[in-house]
Image 1 (spheres, rainbow, N blue to C red):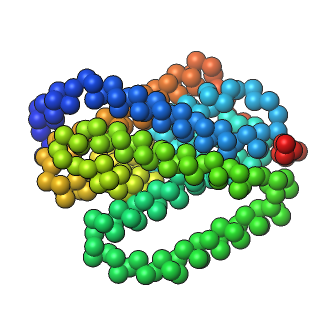
Image 2 (image 1 turned 45 degrees about the vertical axis):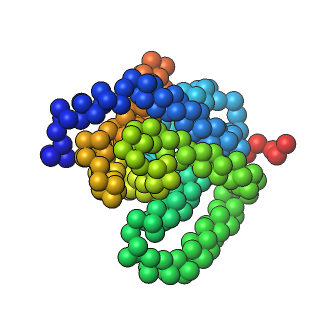
Length: 277
């Protein structure tokens, strides 16, 4: 990043124009809605009593907690504001972020296949890895049903059926945000989509807060294939970070402080799942 010319970056930002920023921000708001729907769909089956804190407040608090918990998993902290046993909250979180991770992983592998042909020989290992992962996930779910009464009633299939399309929409919206900047330099939407998938895979690694640095560095490395100036390449992830992470995190921090939200660290074990309707 030391070679980035701030003046040049400012010039590229000016060339992008206010219209581009507004479009990225509007797309970001649609992304917030997509994430909220996935979060609420995953959580509602494990809510055993009326929430004292509105779901939308809990949702925005997760953005603020991204700056406290490293990696793309900072939002796990928002589950502390939900009542109920830890196991139920964990299942809801895994169904929320797990569906997105699955979509991103598939897209990321496709992107690596396209951008790094020399790695294709290692894809043969997926024939072994994928069945092992599926078997491991199934084993954990079966054990969870036995070890934690009530989890057996969780509608895994119904939740996944809703969350997978929402996760695909999540990645598509982010790709659109990136493309609104990169289209001026001849980068196609498909190339942008594969790039975004790899970037999302990278920021899931818990080595930074809110993906800062990782998002930008990964984008720079991937866009080298398109001979873009560094300043124009880094502009897209910076604008996306501002609209998708920083602004909602600011809202989340205000919500936590203004409403004096307190985590529920000692849930009652007697909580049960809602009955299927």
